[in-house]
Image 1: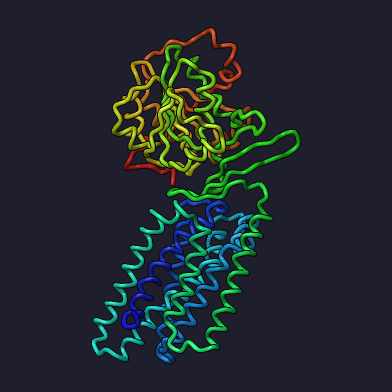
Image 2: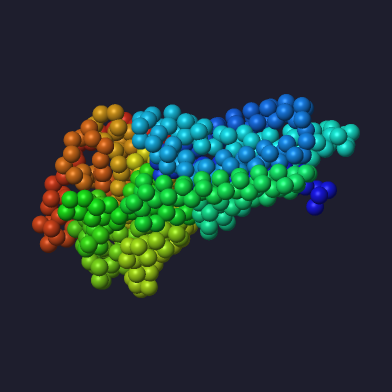
Length: 485
């Protein structure tokens, strides 16, 4: 062990350093989202911090390349890592609330929370090279070996963190585990383990425990409405209880947006746009089976199964943790024979499933942060082919109808017109056309027969149909998708 301790430390430092990027994304996502802007900020700041760490680390190593100095650097990295839970609340939450520019907010949060531990971990490699160079003369081979070990550690750390640790034990527990691991590495690196060092370790461990405990307490105090804070393979998820004057909602939040919510007293779905999905029974009186892409908390499938006893619904939800939360927190009955759940990517399902439906509902869009692969001509052609002879696709889109924020609806309207035999648009609420709002885009295949007996029930919805919309936008394709992430 002692012979290879430097190699082990380099390997683990690489794994932790890359893992910090994934941790950073989960820490920042509830406050600034997880768009390309946020990921770019995180990657850029961490790479910049590592570059400075390599440079400064090399200079420091030339002056004092002792194994004990390396131990001190790793111990300091543990301290700053233990501070992440506190900084999430005191820095990230505060800055995200007061800085309107997303790029500036994301960069500042990444700098203040993650730059120092990334900088310190990057110092490990040049120290290791300098220490080993006192024993080896082939510096090129030595430098290559150390760099390779660090990179292999980064690769394994990324896979382990993303595929196993985050979805199973969560970011909070990972942060604690990383802190403990760094303390162990600091002890492993230390050559002279005297009483003074033992006292230092005990002191630092106590400080780190205080940081961790205070971090959890501050988070809980500042977020009393959070009932569940958990991580899946895809997202950080919050279930919150939101109460106000004469209202009480239970919500499911991913990133900065509310994905689903229900009335906490009645269990009824709260999002008004979901009620427009019921238009399918007026637009196609023969509709019997439905596909929903994007389950989230499954509030619409729950409503659907309660309202339509003679119909079936399939739900495609990529995140199985969502399904688990929907069952435990929102009342989903996964054993209902009329419900079939596919834990799969929505586009993949459209590409390869042989199922046929009378109605397809697409509810996977969050403003312009839409998975572009579900917006394209190719995806919609597959959706149309999946419909029965007379079928309907209904999609919730967040966009304005006039002004600067019309891009999403214009591109999608052009694309739907290129695919379907008829296209309709409905406003969910009676808002100004310049306001960004929920719009229901309907693509119709063939000539389904309307159920005029349902007209009065849906008259208020039908009265909000938008007519006369024109666009000069190009059709969105897999090769040309100027919307989405």
